Structure formats: C-alpha cells, structure tokens
Image (cartoon, rainbow, N blue to C red):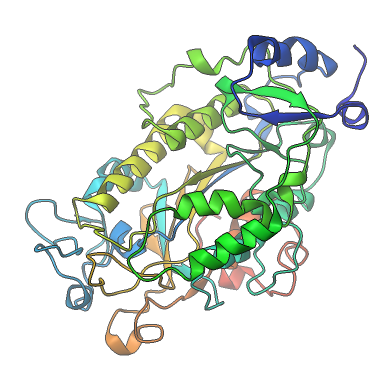
Length: 449
C-alpha cells in the first residue's frame, strides 16, 4: 500500500478507543490493515533523539511528605509524629531517608534513593504557580497550558514545545512522536498531532470520532468539586474524568484517524529489562507500555502518564497510611521505568509534577487541604542529580504563603522551560511560554550543562 500517514488522515475516520472490542478489530487488525500504510523508520539506538516522559500527579501531592524538610524545625511544629500525626520522624523506625541534612525521602520512596545517590535523580522543592487558585481543575488547566490565569488558551505547553523543536523529516513522519497513556488527550498535548492510548493490550478501533463530554455537565461537576467541604475526598478522579472534555477545551472531540503499531509490539508478552517490576494497576501498566514503545523505536519523543489519588484531605497518614501506599506505588513505578530503560536513560528525562501542594498543617481529619507550593522530581542520566534543588522558603509562620502554605519560590514554567530548551532543544522559548519571560537565569539547573 503506497499510502502516507497524511493520506490516511484525509481519507480515514478511525478513532482509537480502549473498549475491549472483538478480535477482528483488535491489535492484529491494526497491525495488518493500518500498519501496512506506512513503513517503519529505520531502527537505531534512539538516533540521538531526546525523550521526555511527563508524569502528572493529579489531586495535588503533599510535597512536604514526599521530600521531607526534616531539617526545618518548623516542619515539626506544624505536623506531629505518631498519634494520627502526618509528620515523618527524623529518627527511629520508619524515619526519613536523609539526603543532605535538611531534606530526606519519605521512607516509602526508598527505591529511589540509589538513583539519587547515582546522581540521576533530583528533587525541586517549593515549585508551583504564581496563580492563587486552589481549584484542582483550574490549577491543572493552568499548569498544563503553562498560562496561569488564562482560560482562553487552546493548546498546551507540551504541544508548543514540540511545535517549536527543531524540525526534521524523521520527526514529522512519526505517528508516535507524542503519546499519552490516558483515555483522553491531556490538556498539555492539546494542539499537537498526538495519540491517546489507554492500554496497548486492549487497543481497538471503531468508526467515527470519540464523543466529547457534554460541556454543561463538565462545568457542573467542576463547580461541585470546588464547592466540596473540607474533608470530602471521594470521587475527585471520577469528577475529573467526567469533566475532562470541558476542562481540556474540547480535546475529547479530536479524532485519531491514522493508527500504526509496530508489528513486533506485543504488550501482553512484554518482559521488562533490568529486573524491573512495575506496580499493578493503570499507573504501572502505563509506565511499562511507555518503556515498551520507546524500546520499539517507533519515534516517541514525548510521553504523558498520570497518577491519581493524591487529594489527601482525610487520613493521610505519615510513614504508613494512605499517602504512604500511594508513594510506594509511585516510587516503584519510577524505579521500574528507570531500570527497564537502562542505557536509554541517557536520552530520557522523566519529570513529575502536580498542580499544587498541601497545607503546612494537618487538618482535623488527619489530612491536609489544598495548598500552594509542592515538589517536582526529575530523573535521567542528564539530570543534575543527587541534589534537592530550588530555593527553600522556610516553614516558620511568617514565611508561609497566606499564613498556611509553603510559598512558591520556583515558577513551574521555569522548570518546564529548562526541560524544553536544554533537553528538547527548543531555541526560542517565547512562543512556548507566551506572556512570560523565562531565561537561563531563572532555571534551577535541573539538567547538566
């Protein structure tokens, strides 16, 4: 078949879904009927291509429990150890894993400490948005568009990053240049020719386009979410999924008309390398399939994965409890991905992010409420690892934002900008971050020079 991908886009109307359709419309159908439309690019050891994997912790992770400021005495004034307290002890059983005398990893992230010690993991503390919103939906929208306070933007920061990367034929021809292991295209990739693939092993097609969520329903769900009283946690991820069509400004209406899966990809029989063991569940599966796609040399440059369940208003716990279990899963996934990719981590940067942090003090329900600054992480051979980066604002009462939250000292756009320029090769950052003047002087040196 002498068809190009662009011809398929013009002629086809195939929408990807993960609906468990019959074998006639499953992976074999894609391999035999669609893959034949375009030859696979010549394989190489990644061809020097840089790859960015973004992991969004939806729900606002408690960065103070992820990378613990145990050297700041005010931390233990705001949070207690034991007796339903959420602080991580400095010494004794289940104590913080010290990194530099001031910060330490939550003990549930012990699997990441060897990566930190190897100089391939860095934490960036006190990162966040200058916008004061404590709405999950607005804050996520602003972070993924990289336009805080702007609700009119139609594209995301990752889409713009790819748009302004140095172009070449190899990039233009790769259907899998941008992928999201999600049911709908995330806001950050809206505006780019990207694919949403919730599960390779259940990948199928159907006629017509995916239907977007009804905007009015999404708006009502968002308003209901923001109106929730403190302590009510159930259903955030469900509400997010229901409202996503509205929040993503119609990204759910996009139709993926051309599909291509490399002939030898078989998600069900994949064996991770390097002794990697991914956690069970959607998050672990998504990371494993990202690794599989990268190692299949199908042209992945940007991959997006999300992890939910970080909205810990109630019974958050300290070293043990709900947050501890989430951090264990989170850390296991990162460590498995790092080990699985092996030498390919020389060209890969993994960046974690969350819309905002949690309050400095725990609430009356043994949890934390919506805060301001949080903690990002970066992994990769090119990362300036073995360090906790950023300017620490302190946790004394007078140092807190609005008297309750960790203050933001690193605008999240400066982290994104450094990755876009130094890792992805974007020369001009102005169109990627319109209206914001970022520069190397604002970078936190997440990446090696």
